[in-house]
Length: 355
Image 1 (spheres, one colour):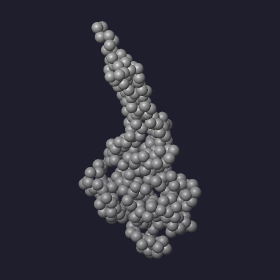
Image 2 (cartoon, rainbow, N blue to C red; image 1 turned 90 degrees about the vertical axis):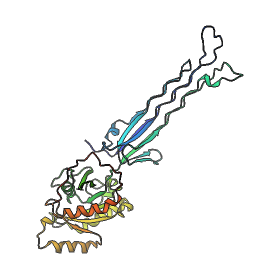
Image 3 (tube, rainbow, N blue to C red; image 1 turned 120 degrees about the vertical axis):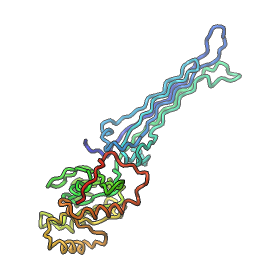
């Protein structure tokens, strides 16, 4: 399925049905009086979060969503039927904005959370409502009220506890495949990952967290280089960022420190709040560094990068150093988990081997 995280749609609630002008006409009742019923309410348009949906692709091609109008009233005190509501199911993590003003209407953060996008119009009054002691044969009625119409911008930001950040081919996809049930595409060329991947990491019984892997950043992403910043929004709801660094690049002219600094600079350009999130340094591909040189290379990198935070030395491919990393991550994010948080059925429940 193609990953779509933005869409623009038009929603229109149904108009209310008009009231009815009618009089009771029966044998032996010459002055039966008014009996025109009210019109029915127009259908409304609702948004509902659904954790079984992963993308906004349904709204990329179906952009117009209209609820039915209410039926007009009829004689014999019969009110018109209300129009049916329509429910638009969206992924958990969807932000709904008014496309004209840019105002956020709702953020769908919980499964089955509902929000009224457009309210249906009320039905009009029949002449039954206008009967008085001085107006016994009213011929007044009112039309139904129009339903709301809006143009909405939808934006999906995935919900994850941990986000992976790094250059293309830093080993992010290999890492998420090694510690979770996610199976992203892995290859020996840049930009293998073209859309965010989510995976659940099982630490123990009823102990898990969600990791998000996004396409790699390169220097100049803020100007549109590579895939640009378009997927960084998916890291804005994470509680922890893992900065993955390739400590053994194939090209000797590539400086891992310069690459790491470029990533941090692009992160700050995109969103200072995202740059300020807790961030750990994960030095990857140590299996490609001679054993007697690893400690010196790690120490030199940390010194030049001027890093003061946590540092983890791993090999995602060889599954070395993953268990301490996973356990430390869980200790960091577990206090923030709500007790009533349901597991996401998009992911399997089999525990993974952390090496």
